[in-house]
Amino acid sequence: MPAEVHSRERATELLAAAGEEDLVALADACLSGGAEFAVLLAPEVGTIAAQVREPIAHDRFLLGDVLACRAEVSLGGRRGWAIRLGDNRIATLAAAVCDAELAAGGPTAPQIRELCVRVEREQQLSDHEEWAALAPTVVRFEELT
Image (tube, rainbow, N blue to C red; front, side):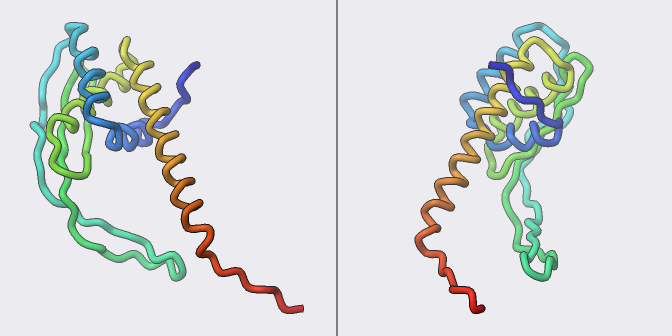
């Protein structure tokens, strides 16, 4: 089954949500091809401001700071970048390698796209399950005519 096409931004978002084992296995496969590899920004842990939008008035406000890790690499002359919530440096570096491989369209890119599709489906299923659990609590009002 061919993997769906995602924008680079969406693929990066999905890689940020992927499991460490999957990312490391794919990054190892990317690096086994012998392409020139360099870490441009070693995995760095810090905090970023979480901004949310109020759903009624659409006002944006800062919710607070969250822990995040970012990294940047070069693989075969193509740059890859990743940021993940938490402090998992290994998964962040692996996600950056996968991003570079996707950008280059390398031999492991189809497997990385398949991982993105799988993560997206898992997110959709999780969202569906969450809404299904909330459905019994919805208050429905009768319409006055």
